[in-house]
Image (tube, rainbow, N blue to C red; front, side, top):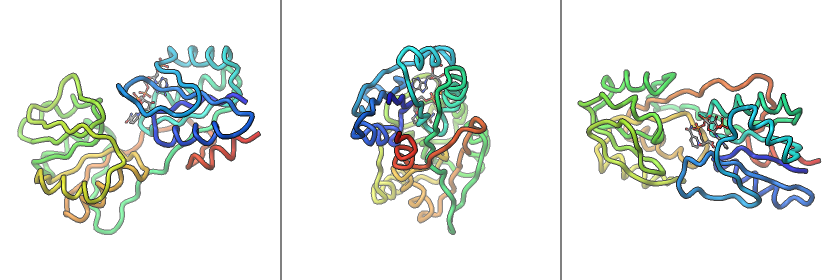
Length: 243
Ligand code: NAP
C-alpha cells in the first residue's frame, strides 16, 4: 500500500514513522519547501508544490497512491482544499490528520480574531511589546504598527514587509515552559499573538502568558473541506490506514 502524506507538521512526521515501520506499506511524505532545513521523516520525501489540485491528482495516479493523508498544518488552508479535490478526481481515499485546537482555561485572557489583519487591528488596544508567534509568512499585516515593538519567533528568517521595530528570534519547537516564562519576562512582553495551531510543542507560551497575566490574541482556524474523515493523532491515523 502506497500512502502519500502531505506533511510539514510534527504529526505528519510521526505518522510517516509509524507507517514506515508497518510491513507492506510504502510511505512518501510531501513538503512544501518553505523551511530551509526541514526535519525529514523516514521513507521517501518529495519537496515542492504539485501545481494545484490537478497536479496533485496526476501525481496520485502516476505514483499509484492508495491512500492520501492531509497532515498539513491547520492553517495550510489551500492545500487541504486541493487534497480534497484531487482525492475526488483520482478516486483515492483521503484522511485528514488534524490536531485538536487549544481550549482556554481559567485565568486565560484570550482575544479570538479571524485573521492576521484583525489581530493587527486589536493589538494596539492590548499592549505595546508583542510576542508574535504566527510564523514568518503574513508579517505584512503588522508592518504599519510603528508604535509597537515586536519579538518575532520563527524557524527561518522573514522576508518581505515587516514591522519597523522588530527583533527576530530564530528557533524551532518544542518549547519548554521555563524558557517561555523567561522570554516573556526578559523582553517585558505585554501581549502574545498566536494561531490556534494546537499541539503540545508550542503550547507552553499559553501557560506562560496566563501566569504573567498577559492577553493573548488567538487567530482562529480557517475552515476545512466538508466530509473528510479526520483523525486527531498519528496513532489513530495509522490504525485507520491499516489494510
Ligand atoms: P497553503 O497556503 O495551504 O498552500 C499553498 C501551496 O503550497 C499549495 O497550493 C501547494 O502548492 C503548496 N503546498 C502546501 N503544503 C504542501 C505540501 N505538504 N506538499 C507540497 N506542496 C504543498 O500552505 P502553507 O500554509 O503555505 O503551508 C506550507 C507548508 O508549511 C505545509 O506543509 C504546512 O503543513 C506547513 N506549515 C504551515 C504553517 C502555517 O501556519 N500555515 C505552520 C507550520 C507548518 P501547489 O498548489 O503547487 O500544490
